[in-house]
Image (cartoon, rainbow, N blue to C red; front, side, top):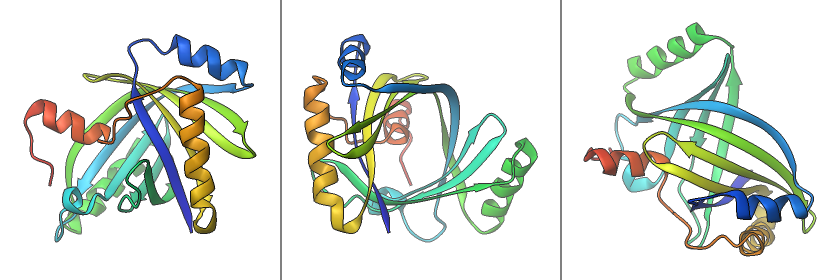
Length: 188
């Protein structure tokens, strides 16, 4: 079972942490625009269980992602299952229709421009992202993936890397939650 271990930080200016990141040997991967459409479950509250189901569109690419409940108090550590499906806008729309027929309801979309960087640090592959979120601002995410037996090491790596980059005051709320709170919409 694969888990995502991440921390997210609001940053007014990402240049300082990015300079430190590049000094550590990080390599810029790409800059992309992502549109994440989140869905509410027909019989349970994802807000209460801290789960998420989304369709992510990046250009013609489509992915469906399930994020399980957060299992750590310091980081956002959770099981994540992400599956690609057929490319193209029509395929994304068809999956959305399928979910709606099954009783899921769209909640909101999060649109972001994401710059990704790859870094192997403390023998772990890490991804660091600079996210520019419409209506929210700029954030940096530091994350790695780990199997269940290595979650403690993954958490320690993420905490130490964030500190090395000078990032403090992590934001535990999701982008979706922050956007809904900003608009006064309750999360289902």
